[in-house]
Length: 488
Ligand SMILES: Cc1cc2nc3c(=O)[nH]c(=O)nc-3n(C[C@H](O)[C@H](O)[C@H](O)COP(=O)(O)OP(=O)(O)OC[C@H]3O[C@@H](n4cnc5c(N)ncnc54)[C@H](O)[C@@H]3O)c2cc1C
Image (cartoon, rainbow, N blue to C red; front, side, top):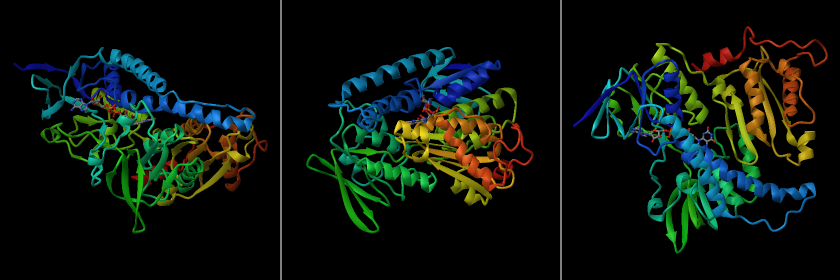
């Protein structure tokens, strides 16, 4: 017998995006229900951000112990207790998941796989049919099966499996150079695995500005990771106890062998089996569900948020999209998501990488006239005191208005340092206004004043002390409006 229930809004998927949508809908008085196949908790908590950062804390500590000799501290005989590290990670994940599940269970929650039957109804498993005038799809992403010839037969681990390892392989071949490959590849290397990274482009983090990607590639090589650039993967096979990856560089075929292969070539939106065609929702299996700026799909009563939309694939973006969609669905609004600042991101490699706003690559592509300023940590007093001198900060400002258009950091505490520019950009600060903000000394944060000063000088703005400080929360022509127009 089928159970039929009705709600104002049904959210499919209780991960970061879906939970944020449900919470927002409930806050505005909507009768909202969640549907999830389980396990409950979402990717971030169970197999993403949190377990990976728990593991990285251990490899960072090991690197700090090794680097301490630069400060006159000799740490002898460091050992890695991998079972302890794995148990610590498991305990943290359980704690985070238990807390999240408590939150999820405050909503009506239907357990099972959802499939659209019509634009206003879904089946959950075999026994339940749910009806609603509006839906939010938040089913996340998955790791696609590898299509590299021979890899499935050879055997490999993906990020899900890597986060569960109890011992470090002696050697590993990492396929990919994106953020997961960088974070977890460096983790393995630092914990003792001889690591080879095969990357298609000229540097790690393809989408980053070349100076950032090249710097990270250099630092990885410097610590012994063999990063092979311009590598085209050909296939894989097993040779005794070794797993071998065949690849070519400029037509020259080569091999990389290891005890394990870490497959880190990215995730795809999870759209399979949702019956999206039954609800008039357009999607592409690799690019995800098509949405407009209001997070509406091609069916205006169905919204899609988070990884399933195929863009960004970051938790804070998933949450933001969930909130926008829920407000639009429950309050009949047309609020548009704006990624100009929300699209900021960070990579927890060492040195860390973080960026907000437009990259130089994007500014050049869009034909925006800008000035930039860069400053190296090697020249910065506090970084020298800490012996953390890898990397640099960079800021880009609009040539006409002086408004900050973007910034990036590669260096110590980059994931924290970027927030200063995120806040400044949220208030449409010019480079000139930014450099006048008081900074404590000596701090890593004060490094930002240098690129800001360089930008201001290039723009012919007055230097600090020339005139009283004037902070504005809006600037008539921000330059960012032009950027938005050109992005379309
Ligand atoms: C190793 C790793 C590290 C990461 N680190 C970071 C980081 O440091 N910072 C960051 O911002 N991002 C990070 N991410 C990305 C981040 O985890 C994701 O962007 C985010 O969790 C996506 O949230 P979501 O709600 O879209 O999807 P999910 O959290 O995956 O939620 C989808 C939910 O839908 C459910 N579901 C699926 N299909 C159905 C169905 N048919 N019916 C019902 N329910 C269904 C699932 O059970 C799941 O609960 C990382 C990812 C990985 C893999």
